[in-house]
Length: 134
Image 1 (cartoon, rainbow, N blue to C red):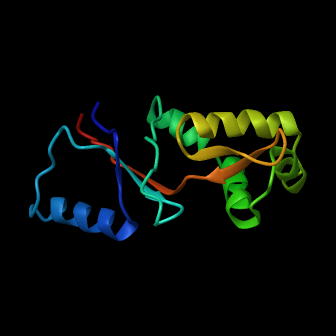
Image 2: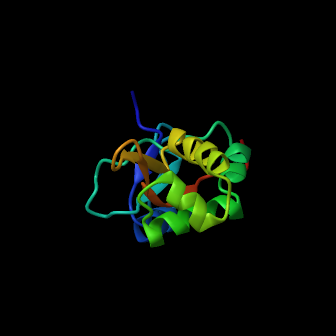
Image 3: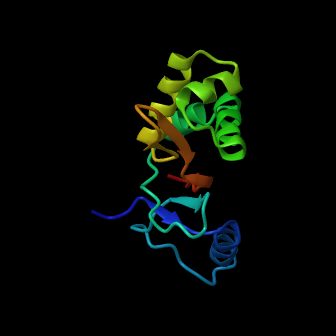
């Protein structure tokens, strides 16, 4: 199975894009169209990030959900319950959002203490490539 994302830093993405624009590089139609920058540069095990559509990706990456991702990255809650308290949101609502973010590969739910799951941000940045002429 071919990957549908490409892992790299923002600077690598920028250089690649500029090289394409300056015609120093051609884009292979089989190359991944989504670039992902890992939250942990030492972690090479990033999962595939995949959205059903650009609209679905934009909806999932709403301001409210990006704030939740920042909260996870900055505060490192030990459980979904703790995250819900920090976010001031209902636990079921937070859990539903985490499952959606996990399904596309942006969050991991690692086993915590007891029956708890600890949310961990898997990707730091997502860059979309859109062919406006297709």
